[in-house]
Figure 1 (cartoon, rainbow, N blue to C red):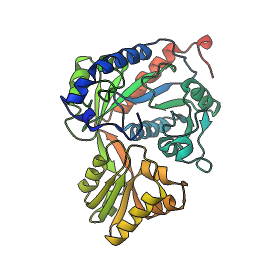
Figure 2: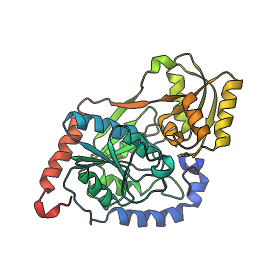
Figure 3: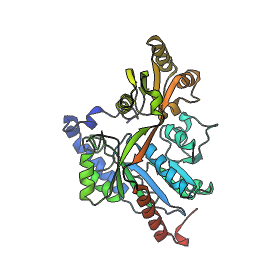
Figure 4: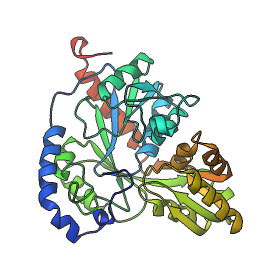
Amino acid sequence: MALDEAPPFWWTKNSWQGYALSPVSYVYGRIAAKRMNMSAAVKVSVPVICVGNFVVGGAGKTPTVHMLAKYARAQGFKVGILSRGLGGAITTPTVVKLDKHNAHDVGDEALLHAEDLTTVISTNRVAGAELLIKQNCTLILMDDGFQNPALHKDFCLVVVDAKRGLGNGFSMPGGPMRVPFKHQLVQTDAVFITGKGDGGDLAIRKAARGGKPIFHSTVEVTGRTKYKGQQALAYAGIADPSKFFDTLEEIGVDVKASQSFGDHHVFTEEECGDLIDRSKQQKLQLFTTEKDAARLKNMGEAQNKVRELSEIVRIVLKPEDPAMLRRIFDKAMKRFKERKTPDALIG
């Protein structure tokens, strides 16, 4: 399924399409669960913390990784980010370089991480981890890869969008679940609810019954006061563009017009020209997300121009529980020390 084709019925309870596809979802779910529960994970010589989600699509993994990285750096770690490089053409283990790569090469998420941190993309997670260790990283944060059993994780923090939650609960193709929930919950160390809404209530109840810690976050917009009162043409190619548009309204931006694109959308010259023309004709300021801005950079003259004319809105997550980050890192370091043996490590 293409990145921009997640069907709306995935997020609709009791959808007939989900039930119609449930036999296929059942088979897919069993295969995915069997793969996820494989135990042949490779242990590397530094701690590994994974940020994942239960479903396909955005849930706030990227800002969650940045939140964890900021804390880890304050504790003295040299943080390395391990990403699959979703949407990028390069599949071999590669250190992301901002002056060399664009979104076509490595995907948008990896570019965002590489602005501040050593970042490696690799479809082979073990090889990617080894490359980060060669870059002298002392802690690896995985952006996604929760369902991938290849690399041993010392802690798995699973992010849930408070608005979208678990969708209709079916595994693909009938729904957005990557693996049946009960199998994923076993591998989960804590659940992190991002944003506002009651869509995550089911995940919260199930996680609580499973004895998993549940943390909540608030969403903050960096420099929000400068945006207040502006009239906007907002555009976004993320999993749920409406979240971005709602956030703009919440901070006082008057969203006069909006344009939604598919998740990880690759902007064409024509689309960029249309956005610029509409903003000029309607006298509106262009607004977009960090991910979209990363996807536009160095992709062509029109793409660079629309990026230059856009306000790029940065979202940060703040844990509601001040002790959350310390608890996560204490547990991860404890597990790392317990499994650390000279003959069991690579790197």
